[in-house]
Image 1 (spheres, rainbow, N blue to C red):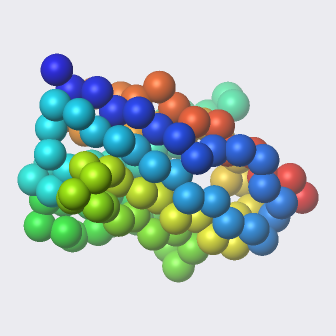
Image 2: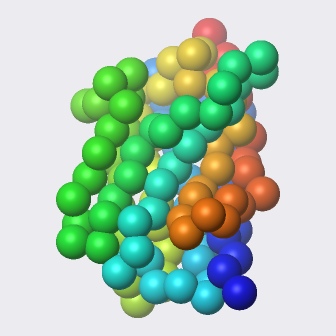
Length: 111
């Protein structure tokens, strides 16, 4: 049974940084494509970043150069480092893999 548990969200000022974590169980992050998605109020859920089993990464244009996805195989954890955050980054952030969603973690960026 695959489970994904996110943490690290919170309130941050514009220009600041946050690091989100996604601890996986039931799968190995180093052989599965792992993704971070977000959903802002009134908007559809969108892909923020993904990392494949080979380590290839993909980013939404809106976060390129500011966010970095990475993984720690020993901890079976995927991270999303968020730098220079903007108010429009405010959303619930979800970890996703193999049709399973985590519970989400709220990120709020104040201007």
